[in-house]
Length: 150
Length: 150
Length: 150
Image (cartoon, rainbow over all chains, first blue to last red; front, side):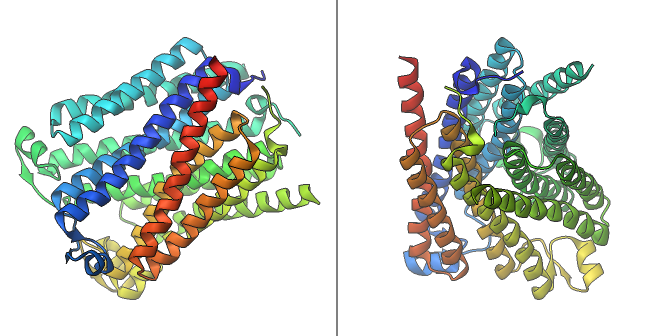
């Protein structure tokens, strides 16, 4: 089956989630750099010399937290994007797709909020939501591919 | 040339490798979190307070190993996915594609096993297999694009 | 609108940038491993035992720098690739696309050079170039999707 990807409503939802999550990741990267500057502790000695601060081997806890929030975002964006692209290419169910993409998006927005506001239980639950979305998509795609082959 | 991606046998192999590698990455992420809990050493102070453990700046070696295995998986999944998508879009040779994808998959399964079971020589060889698959795909795509332009 | 992606000139530019940036990321990964070997300090105790060196919890500064250059490359390759794929799928403007892709590529080549040669100001400017390319692409895609819906 050949689908006109750019005009599918699922692609629209996917594209918006992807762009917002990508901008969040880029924003957290910038926030990490600004936090390093605020704490005046730099991983690169040349930065410490340039901006006047201390050269360290391990980030200041505040910058390290921001960095971990960004890294976690990126680590989840990669599986989600790959599975989402596969899901759209095989032309799987529209409504299930919207549920998966929305679930992921809500989970990841909540995760970033929980990470930065230091709410561990909420962070774990938010993480599980994004994780669940990816696992459900994986199973859905595998079943769709298997049934297509029979 | 326009190909019906969803029905190409190469896409099927690619999709299965991608899903299994994505699930492995997600699984290693969960295993890292569980390992942190088992060693009772947490990077986030709020986690240490919540779950009753020690707040540290550098992970326990066991959790750090699991994390590195996951990170290495993700770092290789990204190049592979991007090259694989390009390879399929340009409609390059089916059999070579199956060899590249299988090579990568075998290399990465072996790499995770070697990392977790602490076999350095095997880990290096497994890594090289996945690495080689990506480099061969890159060259293949560049040549295909160049010959298409002539 | 359905476009023959593999034959679009924008896809060609995208594919070349993607392959070169992917090879750079893989190369920096290999360079990190070689640097560890040169400094004889290993994160994995089994590597230290195998290759005869010291087992450490934090990398030698030289290896850590190479690793950060690689990680930064990968962290920017992911947003760029995802946005680039969306941009091509929606069939957005060819010339703007070439500008975005070229901007990103120039920024990232400059960033790796600046990181390894320890030029902090140049590194920040190069990073901003790649960052700007991604933000502009995001806005462009969002506007294109919105105007398509009206």
